[in-house]
Length: 171
Image (cartoon, rainbow, N blue to C red; front, side):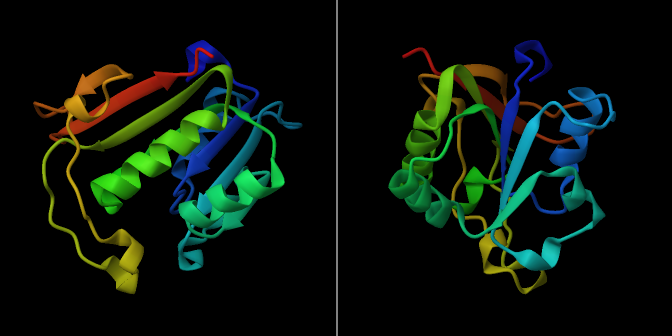
């Protein structure tokens, strides 16, 4: 993300807001007024934490609802979209639908970064949040038009097996 120096970032499924804090730390160096327009989407309001204050705007809705409103209202495009630990919460058809729509929400040369567990991890409705249920496992072969940053085939330094893929909009 740093190499692209985005001026607008959409964080999908912000949870407690850790990605927002990272954007403010690494892109804006923690100095206000912030130069990066940062929006987030979260489907479960009970995750709200002080880190949500890092965002210029948080949309409390599902990703699908956000996309439908976006298509209808023709909102602005983004330089960078982050979807970390989210796509595994969709079945493959729905996840591919989300991916395709997010790709269209990018500016030319904008990037979509997706990370997901590289192996099946059983997870139900954590904390009573049905959106947390894992419904699919994704492999690097599911990201044919993406640059594979990490294929998710071996543990990282923390012991996690994570697949990370980056899509760049070229037209």
